[in-house]
Image (cartoon, rainbow over all chains, first blue to last red):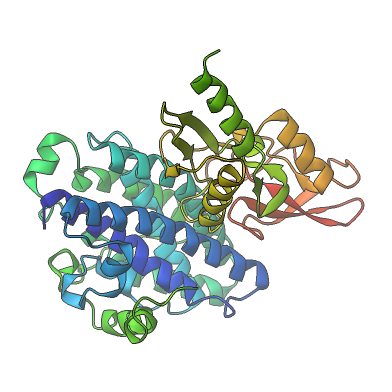
Length: 249
Length: 165
């Protein structure tokens, strides 16, 4: 697969996999408004994922469309990071992950909107405005839960501690093809880390929470090595399409 | 005006009448998502549409509706392109569109996007009674482009078309 296709695919896989996790909240969120919010956030991510997967397929030039890439790849061909694959956990975990990931995605898309690749730039310029709302939403809940009851504070801090272990993989540049970094098509994500960290810390501080120092989890998503929970996610996501090839409605 | 220019204008007129299926008082022209309509010398029409949100589920329906409207108007060779850049913004909703939204009971996009950890949004009036005393119930509403609000005077809930820029 060409370097550009692989890059678009990895970004698209992050969005697609996390959109699936948000979809799992529908009908289970703490309140009706939150059902709607999480579904909408998932829908934004799904739209971003579709654009990126479609583009990856076009660049690859083997006739694979978004559906072929989403539903007919094996786990080892997925390039998503582990953070998006983790199960939803409790509501605090979902919010902590949303805070960490949307802050990263906002920085990523902001930078990518001046990519030398016009299609990546266009997808990013559109997506960054959507992610801005996701980050706001995560911020509001982080403040409310962190600075809430003893129970909500405790669970929110536990969630931040857990999510933090998986954050470093987002800023790993090693997997990004050097030619894409040199041409300015891809973003050097390692340069985004400090800004994201400051942003997380400012929200956490307001929420009476802290960002712990942790031993990072072993990543590998960009090489196709995934969290154990990824297989279950794909089984559910791909089941309908594989059982009924070409199904539409 | 030559024949192609006249046909272009006619094709645009037809495409511009297509309604947004999720807010069926707004045309796609009011909404600002109809970006361009071109007719070449052979009469082939190319329409550029831009989605409001990346994941807007109405996009496919709108594309089909535009194609159907043009075919019904006698254009046989129609192609609809989805263009992402420049990204859509609520600033592209026309004044007419804003008026129609208000009459339909949806508060048009207004105020500025809140920034920073303290989130305060200003200036959304109730579309039912006009009161400025309103509060946000949920930043995410019935569709990606709307938020759910409530009027603190008449107590009616209403949709607010979110500012996106």
